Length: 107
Image (cartoon, rainbow, N blue to C red; front, side):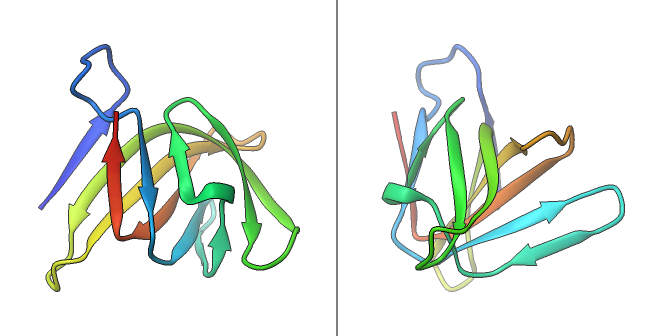
């Protein structure tokens, strides 16, 4: 079961998320969805409405710039937590997302 949490004025909603597991990026366009494995965001945490550079892991190569607009949390069948960090990338109006394991929301 997953719970979608959007940005709203309710103070019980998380303001961000941090993770300790691997991070991947799902790039969504009108034509296709492409998973880019092994990416990184400096600090392994993001805040709602923040801007972040998504880089290829262990490099300085910037793949995308993401503005965080929504956080989604869930649990896998093996008990590990996951999260999707939805956001607008670069000049696109189609949202893509970061997919991370071992996530913890924070206020």
